[in-house]
Length: 86
Image (cartoon, rainbow, N blue to C red):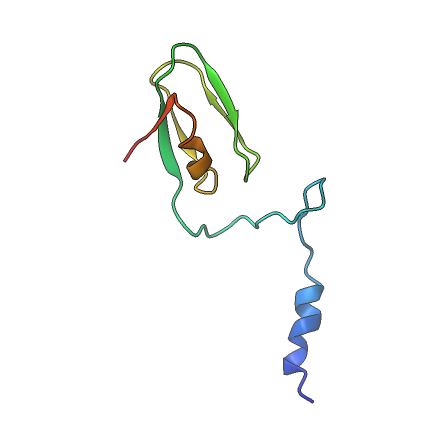
């Protein structure tokens, strides 16, 4: 039986990142898609936490823009005071 050059063992030996909840975290590096810009249209300030990346995004004043991780972008579309920029 072929062991394919011990690839299984070398893959299993690589350390993996995990959240405190035990869920694996995507590795940094080449991103599948580019990040997305959003503009804040509210009246005061806004802090939002990305549900996938866990990053905190802070919009200090109306008109502020932030580059949002592409993995969090779809959930940010549900925030009424955030507008996606092209």
